[in-house]
Length: 119
Image: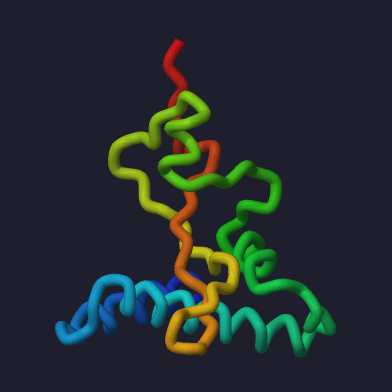
């Protein structure tokens, strides 16, 4: 049976979890890099090389027609992320570090379907 990209990412995440010297955010970065690299390869071979990483991630997660926001963003909109829901990993906007290098932070987003609105 062929493993999907998402299943491979989970396996990568599990392998990273076994590396106790990595911080939690480093593990998430490794997972996101793994997913993104595989999606980039697929996009290149299918002629979609100019598609953004986050757009490819949305398609991979099957979230093309849903609203995404951070936990705090949903709170500000009057919603509450339901208990037990897990965030989707995306790349944040490029940040220039004081040390002179730039990087994209990991962004944790929740889909509208993971949120409850009271009243």
